[in-house]
Amino acid sequence: MLNKKFNLYFLITFLVIFLTSMYLFFINKYPPIYGDGIGFYEYFRKIFITGDFVNSTPIKYPVGTNLLQIPFLLIAYGFSYIFKIDMQYGYSQIFNNAVSISTFFYCVLTFVILYRIIKYFFSDKVTYLTCICLFIGTMIPFFTVIYPSYSHIYGLFMNSLFMYYVICYENKYYKRTSSEKILLDLGLGLILGLICLIRYTNFIMLLTYIFYNVFNINDLKKRLTIIFSKKLFYQIVTFLFIVLIQVILYKISTGRFMFNGYAGEEFPFLLNPQIFYVLFSDTKGLFIFCPLLFIGFLSMLLLSDKNNPFKFSQLLIFLIVTYIISSWWCWWLAHGYTIRIYCDIICIFAIPIATVINLIFQKRIQSFYRYVISFSVIIFTFLNLLWINGVVLGNINSNLASWYMLNQYIYSFFQ
Image (cartoon, rainbow, N blue to C red; front, side, top):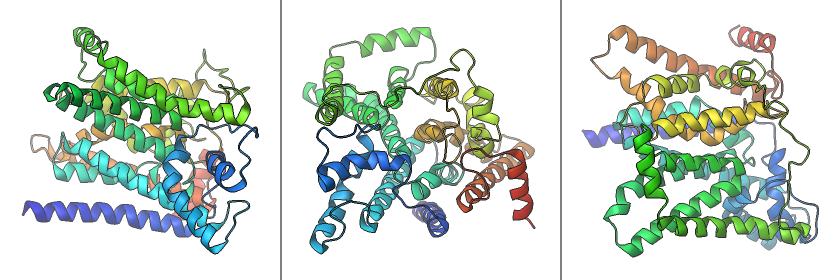
């Protein structure tokens, strides 16, 4: 019976992800390699297609996204070489399809990892329902299908992998031999290095390791004592070795070991962060376009308990990322769906949202509250899909929306 339930939950989750993705794929008007995604793709194009990477125009973005895409792009390159298709520019359909397949692949892997993270604390039923909600209740399908060449799904994959690795690391490390411990430390540095090569600010995910199982100041003191030991050497060495890839590429491309691709893009709101607009504005407000994440945020504040080893770090990461975004000159982050950088850290909402969904099945909770929670999750998830549909169809501005635009779209949708 349990096996049947397991298969049913898995089937439903797979169908939701697949059918939602297929629907967006057929209504999508954008090429897969588009916008900022062109910048991430430039590493492959300049090195393998045009051959002009040396002393070329500097690439603004780090190489991590393209590194993860490489296996799929090399297969596309092979087909392109055999059939003599677009060996001059690198923007043919075969390369666009490779990017789309790559992003969908990493999206699926992300949910395999998220399943394992959530399952560590909750039942199968709650775990699969949470995975469904995280997919259709956030910006994940948009950046999986509509803007697949952007870095956000790759960032989410690596950040989710790091969270899962930290859980495994903490539960296995002290039972291993000295050589096995070294391998675990090297793995930690490797993953963190790749996280930084995708987006430098994602280094903040290190907090999930630093504050693992930390609930008070005494816990923090003990934790820091454990972290600052000889194992830190192996973690740092591997981390620096991975980051060195970017440094070498900068040297080859620009003649310099360091390059600031965001020069001139400043933080004028450091003393006046636009937090309300980032979270609640009609322009791109996170909790307006992805209201399910508001439930996750409230859960971080009110519901997460000592069973959640990331209780402190997940809230701290969210607050720091929010401050960074709201201090930047372009806090709405131009075209895309809502404040897209949050897509990279959706993994920190997994346990808080699962905590809320778990309440639905707790008989000790009054029926009224269970119905309210269920209704809220369903409505908020539906709203997210509605807004994504509007943005893809062009009825909602992907750069600067407005309450009027949102109201008009809802009105026309239900007519």
